[in-house]
Picture 1 (cartoon, rainbow, N blue to C red):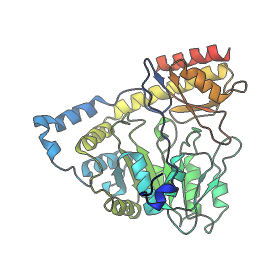
Picture 2 (tube, rainbow, N blue to C red):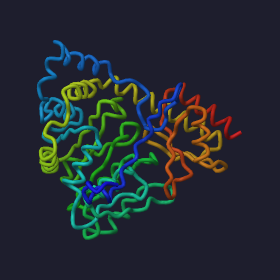
Picture 3 (tube, helix red, strand yellow):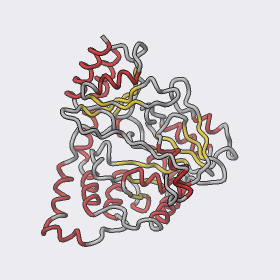
Picture 4 (cartoon, helix red, strand yellow):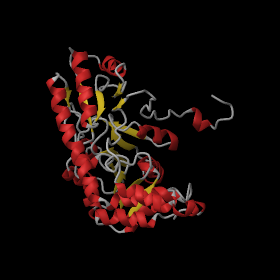
Length: 359
């Protein structure tokens, strides 16, 4: 605490990111990073940008990120004017909360979801209400529609949801957007490429729908920090106004060219995501064989609990073996572990350790 802080700072409860420990021979399965490297085209594009002794780095990057927006738009069949880019999806979401989700009526999101959402609400003074997942940890669209147009100012949730990994069918998202036509509906698709349907296909039919993506997961670029939003021009223009009132040069030159190269290499993207999906299914089966209850996942992680083991103790036992998973000390989910899908070798090491611990 400091007397020099602004009043808003005293009331903040910051987001706690996943641990980045410095341990030898670590099996790191706690932050949902892709276990495989990005496309070689990314490295080639960055090296080209650095040619001439880095001469280009003395120049500001394109403030609009046009070439990247064109590459993203082409991938989704949208115009570049329907694409917004920023420093990771977290920055894109931050602008979204301020620019689109602060209304007289409360913002709605699930009671179990990405824990950054209430942090943004605290930062921007946004009134919000949580909507409980059902007993199977699924989102029920009817619970949002039941509040009617006077019960919600906006809605946001991840699809697949985090940390559960459960996905909502595209038809249900369309029903939500149509049922609350005057409310911004934001679908956070950080993990969608690992098994769910993207709501990007619904954008041209629903002017209230914004879809947020990141290149951190399926494109293996968590270290480059690139995210984007897709929506009709009216929503995108709102985000641009917020960006240009905060930082008109959000993405650096290396991030812009690297991200565009990643978007262009569809074959690499498809190969790595299919490898993650195959490993996820194998890992889920192996966990079930050890007695774990594993939620169906469309993400690059699994959410699992063991009826005979305390989750915190399991996480600690794994850590003593240099294996890190994520444990949330939160209501309803404090007996679950969120386990990132790693390489085949990492998953095998996890299963061997759990087999010894459970036994």
